[in-house]
Every structure is written in structure tokens, then in C-alpha cells.
Image 1 (cartoon, rainbow, N blue to C red):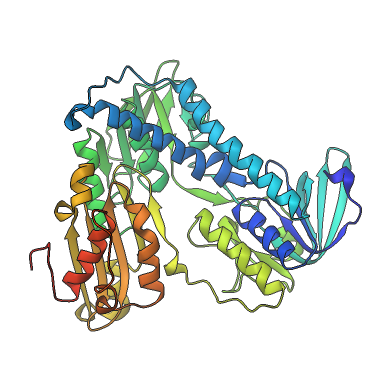
Image 2 (cartoon, rainbow, N blue to C red):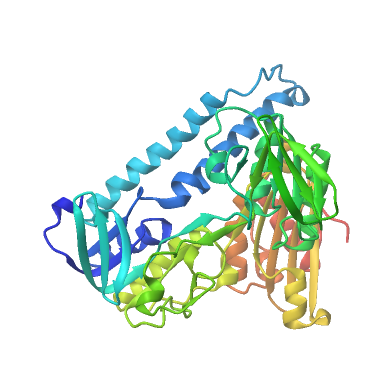
Amino acid sequence: MSADLTTTTFDVVILGAGSGGYACALRASQLGLTVAMVEKDKVGGTCLHRGCIPTKALLHAAEVADSTRESSHFGVKATLEGIDMAGVNTYKDGVVGRLYKGLTGLVKSRNVTVVEGTGRLSSPTTVTVTTADGEITLTGKNVVLASGSYARSLPGLDISGRIMTSDQALNLDYVPKSVIVLGGGVIGSEFASVWRSFGCEVTIVEGLPRLVPAEDESCSKALDRAFRKRGMTIKTGVRFASATQDASSVTVTLEDGTTVTADLLLVAVGRGPNTEGMGYEQVGVTMERGWVITDERCNTNIAGVRAVGDIVPGLQLAHRGFQQGIFVAEDIAGLNPRVIDELAIPRVTYSEPEIGSIGYTQAQAQEKFGAENVESYEYNLGGNGKSQILQTTGFIKLIRQKNGPVVGVHMIGARVGELIGEAQLVYAWEAYPDDVAPLIHAHPTQNEAFGEAFLALAGKPLHAHS
């Protein structure tokens, strides 16, 4: 689209069209600002094309496989004949394609100028773009850095052949018989869950003492039990040493000397900021190990240069970048939006079972407020009617300051991610248990379990043992 440029000067120039970049572009345009957005790949970024959306499509296909396999438990006669990865990928790509078409149409309708090419920051007010037609320079009164992230590897571990990251794993055209997942965080746990549902033998290797180590310890332990019950092998507290591969397998050696062999190795050790070669350091933007350092209003150290999304230290979540993009657009427009509370950002791991959380973990709350000033309550989903219908187990855990507001909500069980909206409201509004306990939760829903947990924490448990 660069050939159609009628101007190269804009109110806002955005480098990257992922969740943070396009949200900023749409909101800025809505507020009457002229906007250019530079993207070398496709609008939508990692989230739409290589992350959130395609992985969740795979997870839904996995849920369908499990439901078919277990249908006799519900009196339904069905047989799982196998997994047709060509069909799964057609379904996945169809979801992505429809969302991409809708997003590109929306961006076009908002008069956002999309410049296709590789951009770099060339001064505090300019972005130079290498396009198919040559090099052009865009000038912006404000520049927003939103260049996203990439799948990390480990030093000396080459991504090739049977060793892959989530980027390659998303496009597999077959179901491997066995997989080693290196990393038990969100990405590793989600892929492990998918592959186990598809019939793979799965081994997870996590160097830290527990799975999903950023979550409350109670959720980590529950996920570990659930994964082991599903037949996965879990190795925590042991670090990766090396990997070798041949034509038929890959073998991982751990620091304790043990080895694991499988068809594939998924390297899921997190994502890094995509900032190398972007010109940020050369222009003088303060960086730290590749991250762009900002203040709470997403300002870099250079006036007029902002940064949002995965390149900024913190939670690497699409909805965080999305909200930061909106925030920056409104701040540029002079609306003085409210600063984003990082702890109020909802977190969901879409494995089976799911984990949903917001606010402080119990350990964080005790460190912040003092162990003697913190109390918690776990409501077991075994007492919830809809959870019984779904045949899921798990719990909802509430953490509060004694005689004070709820400061953390942690949930594990099938579909609990859908409950995170109310949890966010409770945390963000600093609600007390007595504020939430009178609210009516529809029956039968898993949302009732949320209400029951608050009833118990308010001192009036009903479907729970006091």
C-alpha cells in the first residue's frame, strides 16, 4: 500500500501492526488523528497469525477429540477414529482468515494508512521503511514502537528439523507419536494439552520447581496432578543440558544426566522482544537486554516516542498490548486516560484444565501485606452443579487482606477462563467479600462457584464446608 501514499507526515506513526499497534491505530484515527502503521508481515501480528487465535483453535479441536473419546460417559455412542491434521489446520486457518479479513477491512474503513515493509526508527520523529518499491521515510509528531516478540530458543540449540518452536508446531501436518515440551509455562502447557488430547505421549521438562511458575502455587500443583492423571510425564526442577536429533527422533539430555527421546522437541521457553535491528538503541531509546524501558504512561526516555506490547517488560499478553495501544492513542489525544494496573490484567492458560487468575498470588500478597494480614479461601468445584455436568474438577481461590478487599483470584478447571471478567471487576474495584456475596449468580453455571466462594469468605458458606 506504500505506493498509494499521498503524504508521509502523520500525527502518529506506529511501527508494528500487532494487537498493540493496530489498537493504537484504530483509536487514534477514531479521535481524529492521522495515522500510519508499518508492518512487514500481516496486520494482526503474532496474536492473530502465530499465537492466541490459532493455538486456541487447536485447543478447541483437542476438546472435541476428548469429548468424542469420552462420549460414553454421557450416554452418547461415538468413536474417535483419529485426528485429521489437514482438517484441523483447515479449521484453524479458516478462523484466522475470517478474523484477518475483518480486521483489514476495519483498518481500511478507519482511514489508517498501512505501509507494507520493514521499518526502523531513524530519528525520534521518523520511521524509515524498506518496501517493495524502495525506501520511504514517514514523519510522525508521535512515534509508537509496537514491534512485538519472537519465540525464544536456548544458546546452542538450533531450531531445525525435529526441534521447533510454537511457530513451526502450529503448522504440523501430522500428529507425532511422542513429544518433549521444553518449558512448562503457558505456551508449553497449552501445546502439551493439545498433543495429549490428540493421542501423543507427552513429556514436559521445566527447570523451575513447578509448572506455570508465575501462577499461584495451588494452581501449579493442581495442573501438575491433572496432567499426570491425563498420562503426561512431568519433570520439574531439572534443567536442559543438550539435544541431538537424527532422521527419526530427538534426544534431550538433562543436567541430572537422564535422557528423554521422542519424535519432536518443542522449545517453549518464552518469547523475546523483537527489537534487534529496529534502530531503537541507535536513536537513543533506553533499552535493557533488548527490552524497551518505559514509564507507567508508556513513554520512553525520548519525548514523543512511546512503546507498547511485548517489547515492554511485563506480561506478554495480547490484551495487555491492546489496552496499552488504546491508552497511548488517548494520551496523545490529550484525554489523560487512567494508568493501567499491571496486576489488574487477567491471565488465562487455555490448557485442560484451564487456569484463570488476576491480582496477587498468595505468596505475593503475603510479601506485600504481611502473612498475618492475608487470608484465603478455596471453593472446590465439586460442589458446583455445572462443573459436575461438565465432569471437571478444580477450585476457585480468593485472596484478601484481612478485613479488607480481595486482592487476588485464582481458578483452575474446565472453562474457568470465562469467569475472569467478574474476577477483574472484583479486583479492580477493590471489592470486599460482603460486596460480592449478595450478587445473584445464575443457576446452574460455573459462575455460581464464584458467588459461593465469596459467600464463604464473607462468613456465610452454603454449598461449602465451613
